[in-house]
View 1: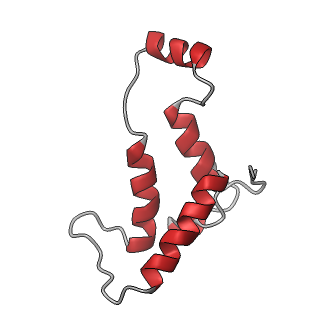
View 2: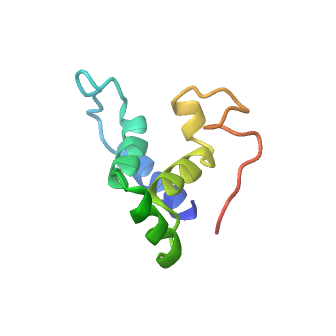
Length: 99
């Protein structure tokens, strides 16, 4: 989740330099929320049970769902941006930070 944190800081720095910040019609997300939606979208997909088993056996990375949920739940910014109650699954009291 360290990479997500660094990428989010860079994105926020970039956003601050932009004067035109709009909410996308019908999506209802602001530019700050879009960062996390884009992160999750990059890992979006489905796997059969057999494919998941193969991933767990052969890939050193966690399955996509775990990578997304684990990273954003441990983000200091996500919970506030999406109004997740403190202590909820997407905004736990104790957060883990990797590098």
